[in-house]
Image 1 (tube, rainbow, N blue to C red):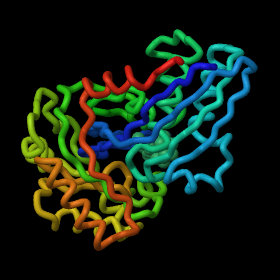
Image 2 (cartoon, helix red, strand yellow):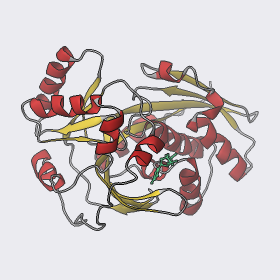
Image 3 (spheres, rainbow, N blue to C red):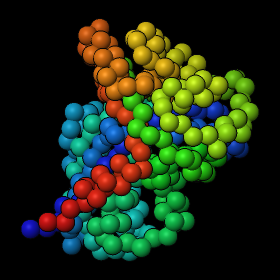
Image 4 (cartoon, protein in one colour):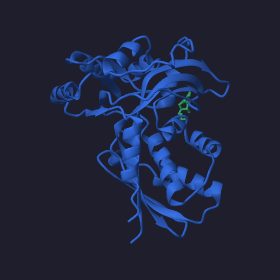
Length: 309
Ligand code: C5P
């Protein structure tokens, strides 16, 4: 029986996101504190010797991708790029268990692409250096490098410059998506007339030991895409209000270009209570009580996740 490989694709959360400038090629310069959560997609795969790559998409959010050509999926693009780069004649049968809403500001496709790179480097025994991996990741999308990195960090440049920060402890978080996809380029375009934020506002030496301490520091920052996102999709305001109304929410904010928003709590009981209360009023929303992923948990889950039979 062939070995089965597995990789987590954790949701990426922009705890704050400042737009600090724009390049001549149209890409925006960002500064963003990024962390990951224990909720995410899961990519599994089995080795093929014939070079063929297949992708089967399952999971609760998989149906949102049924109208798309599987060949266009970022997982397939990542796999083909690794084949071209290395000349390997190996292939893979991949299965993506899609649990995160698509086009929702929490990395989804980027996290899947990063998981594909990790999984196939392991499965195909590829020995690509950091520079080559970063180049491949960035060519797949501005959020793929940070998802490949997979650790709490300050992201700058267009998403390609990553500064490691002290790891966060597991901080209770509630993620909510109103069930409507948003287009990232459209959101960036809609903020064309807005001013840029100053860069260097975040003190990278800070360490946090609780949700309250993190929320307090984050209150000095914001998400510069919120105004344009809410003008395109007003439901995002409903999500932010629903989060802020429930007891225990220390900070409610949109992630990335939306529409997913997060709340920060001191205890997981508070996050779960808020999740239950909001689900009663909005049964169609995607609601996930989770926590920030700390490096130790990630290492442990990966040990358990890669299991040659
Ligand atoms: O790189 P990715 O495909 O994720 O980006 C989608 C779109 O978002 C880009 O085509 C661009 O319009 C916008 N974007 C940007 N600046 C960034 C990241 C994305 O303007 N740093």
